[in-house]
Image 1 (cartoon, rainbow, N blue to C red):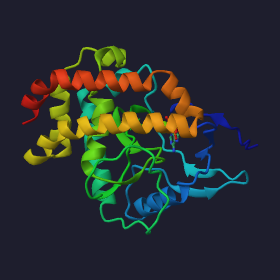
Image 2 (cartoon, rainbow, N blue to C red; image 1 turned 60 degrees about the vertical axis):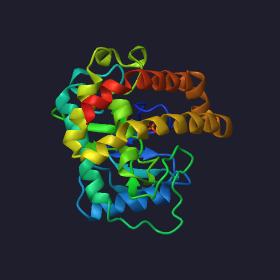
Image 3 (spheres, rainbow, N blue to C red; image 1 turned 30 degrees about the horizontal axis):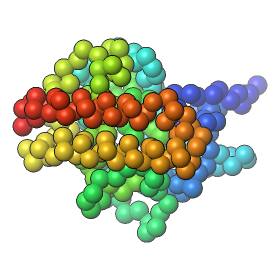
Length: 264
Ligand SMILES: Nc1ncnc2c1ncn2[C@@H]1O[C@H](COP(=O)(O)OP(=O)(O)O)[C@@H](O)[C@H]1O
Ligand SMILES: [Mg+2]
């Protein structure tokens, strides 16, 4: 007898009530969901395999997405998530996603979640905007899927690159990193990521300045979200998200020259 058991999924910190039911995932339907579903349907149409499929809305009004088979790194990060191969794979996956999405013309006025931080500049594509370890599915040690498109919105490639580097290089104070990443050579990893993504020389020059802008914006955006939306955002803020960003900013500034030398 098939029983629709609901298995709570707690990988991310943000969305309450994410459950797995068989080969599907049920998530709360938000104001941004129609925009995200348009994006996911487009990705399906162009044959991009590295994202969940939209299967509809269930009897409880939740979005129904396909389960992407594989493993999503949780904290503390498993060894397979911190290797240079994994990092290279994430860069390639992000690049493939960007190639797939760049010709997507989202409907005018699509209700993206715009409360998160943005870089200046003309949007080039719909970015994922939240490529954390918890939002990447691995199979056999290889990153194969992006999940959790809640923060997807019009942005630049560079925004997605620096956000991803923030979590994966990682650009963070060593004391705030997952233990397996405390000692890594971040300059080498940033370089490796940019090589794998295929950033040209001009692009590389933009990475650190873009990270600088992004940290400041995300500090402001997270504080505003904690104040305006409360809930999980307030909890994350209370747990020290703001001070972690401040420490990451300090770390970036004190390591700037070395990172810059590695990049260019
Ligand atoms: N479509 C999916 N395929 C596979 N795993 C998923 C899927 N959706 C969610 N998960 C798992 O559930 C966790 C939390 O889901 P997520 O959508 O990222 O919510 P949050 O907004 O809380 O980060 C993920 O880290 C992952 O482990
Ligand atoms: Mg998530």
